[in-house]
Amino acid sequence: MQSPRLVPLDAGNWRDALAVRPHPEQLRFVAEFEPVALVILAKAYVGARALRWHPFAVTLDGDMVGLVGLAHPKPPGECEICHLVIDVAHQNRGLGRAVLGLAADWARRELPACRRLLLTVHPENAIARRLYEQAGFQPLGYERDGETVMARAL
Image 1 (tube, rainbow, N blue to C red):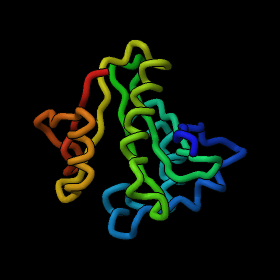
Image 2: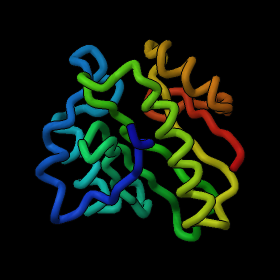
Image 3: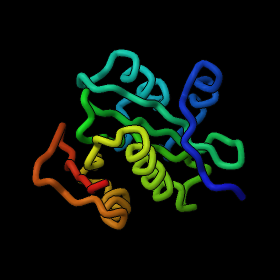
Image 4: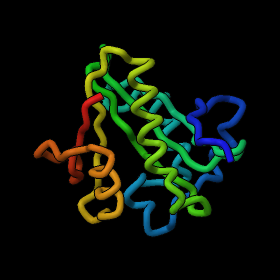
């Protein structure tokens, strides 16, 4: 089995990304709408929150198993993980943890001025919060849109 990879969402694969679905109980934690791929792509297109967006598919052995958006201001002092989702059929295999590492690696490589990685977590999403804390993310002491903002140094 290969390691998971981040692959840019583009004209050649965006339709495949529409099939990536969270567990139904997780959707409210990931995005307000489905398919999540369209949420990420729309935000990338319009530059939501005045950020530059980088939409990615998560692939494993050639199959699309997840999605994530990375976003940053111009110039990038920090990068944010947005809408991380692992398809329901591929959960509980360590892919979420792997994506956090891949996102950090991408930010270090592509955004060398970026000094920390941010994300938000819904207060009721205990599983994700535990995963983020194990990956080195710590709460910053404030919320955005009702979610705890967390960060880790790069």
